[in-house]
Length: 147
Image 1 (cartoon, rainbow, N blue to C red):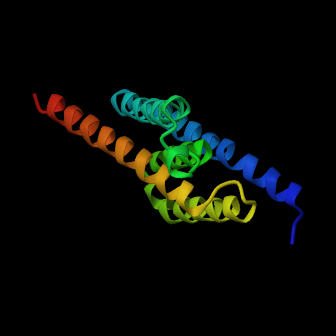
Image 2: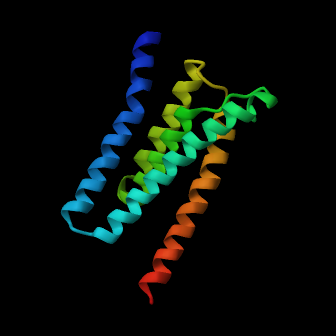
C-alpha cells in the first residue's frame, strides 16, 4: 500500500486534474466558436465555485456543520462541481468522472480527512444548489433562444 504522503499527494492532485479537463472542455468549445454554449459553461463553473466557496463562508460564520458534529468539505464541494460540469460537457466519459469522484471520496475516508457524513452532507447541499441553478440557467437560456 502506498504511504500516507503518497496518497495525500494523489488527493491533492485530483481537483487540479479535474480543473485541467474542465479548462480543456472550455477551450474546445471556444475553438468550435460556440459562444452561447461557452457562456453557459463558464456560468456553470463560476456559479458552482461560488456555491462551493459560498457555503464554506456561510459555514465558517454560522457553524452549520460543526453544530451537528460535522465538517463542511470544500474539497468535496469543488470536486463535485467539476465532475458535474464534466458530466454535462463530456458525457461519453460520465462513468469515468463518477468512478473518479467515488474513488476520491473513498481516498478521503481512508486518509481520514472527512467522515461519510461530512462528504454526504456537503454533496447533498452543493448538488441541490448547483443542479437547481443549472436547471434554471438552461431553462432561461432555452426560453430566450425560442424568442
